[in-house]
Length: 125
Image (cartoon, rainbow, N blue to C red; front, side, top):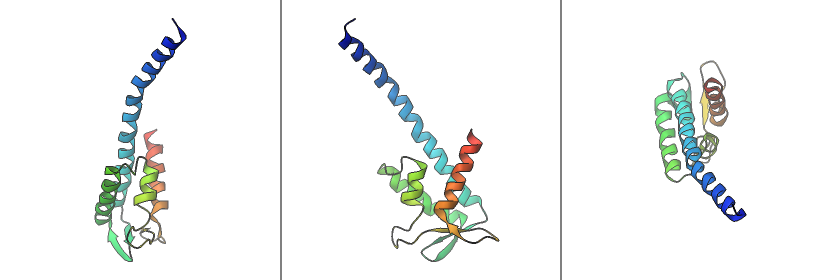
């Protein structure tokens, strides 16, 4: 077989396998983000946005709206980018979001969400 035919065949095989690999990544990212959002909703913690504290379900709804916005624009292809671009800082005021759990000092939401993401990945492996 001529070298150009072998290269063409290799590219064809490689190209055929790429959609399967690419299709798995968004599913995994969605699972990770859903886990983080559910952790917010189901925790006894409160979420601070622009100076007001919200219970978990209201915080989850807000973050879900931000995720939907980013996802439609392909701006959150990973859980880390979702945290950075949508779940860390108010897009209106520029102030960092915080999470306050009973008996603990408030922490930046990015820190808390990264901990939840790490937990998901540990439990999933």
